[in-house]
Amino acid sequence: MDLLRFVTAGSVDDGKSTLIGRLLYDSKQVFEDTMVSLERASTAQGLGEVNLALLTDGLRAEREQGITIDVAYRYFTTPRRKFIIADSPGHVQYTRNMVTGASTAQLALILVDARKGVVEQTRRHSALTSLLGIRHLVLCVNKMDLVDWDPARLAGIEAEYRDLARRLGVECVTVIPMAAVSGENIVDRATHMPWYMGPTLLEFLEAVNVPDPARHAGLRFPVQYVIRPHSTEFHDYRGYAGTVAAGQARVGDEVVVLPTGARSRIAGIDRFEQELAAARSGDAVTIRLHDNLDVGRGQMIVGADHALPVTRRFTADVCWMSDTAALRPRQQFWIKHTTRRVKCLVESLDDRMDVASFDRRDRPESLGLNDIGQVTLRTLEPIFADSYATSRDTGSFILIDPATRLTVAAGIVREAAVTEPAASAGD
Image 1 (cartoon, one colour):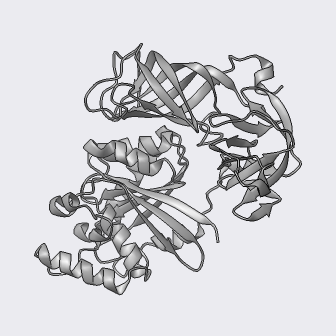
Image 2: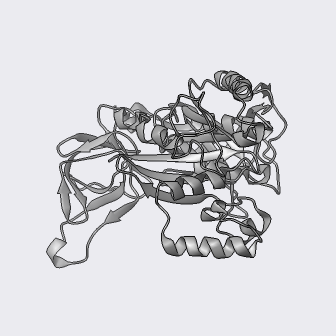
Image 3: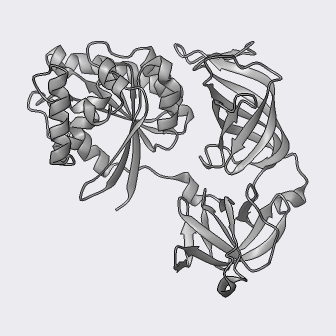
């Protein structure tokens, strides 16, 4: 069975946590002792029935305030598929948490309240999921019971959202009307909407095909750790541990080590005590090379026939996450890209996205909390970056404040200029 990662997004009180709780409960994924705990917590809140949102809202502050603050991950399996759910917060204050949850998702569930329709946070979260490369969105029109199951209301919301998705360049949008509190169209088909002929949410999740472009790209293997056992039995062993970020590694393939440009061939691929013939995108493995090369953390092993830009200057879209200071030109940060961390300078702020209209405002003076904009960065040392459309792992990064050591921005590479000699790229 394959694995599908998806994230919930939307405004406050649209029912994201309730939807996930209902999905887990109706698909028989909740254990008896968990239900006892939920019943006890619901009674303490003075509720007459079990609050399924508590399955994901586990922090005390979340339960007291009735909102999601941090991203909650839940895992479940059906006979057809495995799933990892990221239940993200809806409040604008926690938009940065939502970015974290969406950064690894292949699919996004965008919830809207049928009474309110598309609101500002719907637009902001849709823009973020689009920037993060999620190309298949599910518009979950929740609380249909509160608009008397009106198909005309659904049609109006769908038309508005499809126009929004078109402006963001998202072509795949699936619309599912539902009522998460009662479970209508979550796992079981709705009895109050006979006019709806589409799939339930679970039926859709089990059947949807979400392609992964990284699997078809060239090999990208950021070195995380060098394994040199001290045992005399394995004194000749030298392996490079990490996760295949893109493409496929096969025993016998010719590879190039960046930034040195040294060439070798893959002698073996190990996982625990097992030797593999090949490893693909997402596999955590140890690679052995035929030659005894000087390779360390922060370097990258790439396919010899698939050049990777070695750059010190690139443009990127960033989401600014700091609530204590704004982002301005000429500021310096640490950039964390794959397993490499180097110093960088913000050369310029190129534009800022207006969340309401999706227009780009050229040359802003600054970016504030939760602002999205394009910047040009220059690094002190070279990094090895693909565009985000090619690989999420080699096309994404974070910025770290050197004074506070706090993560202040998340970014995705749009275009990298090749600034290093051709030999460094393994040509």
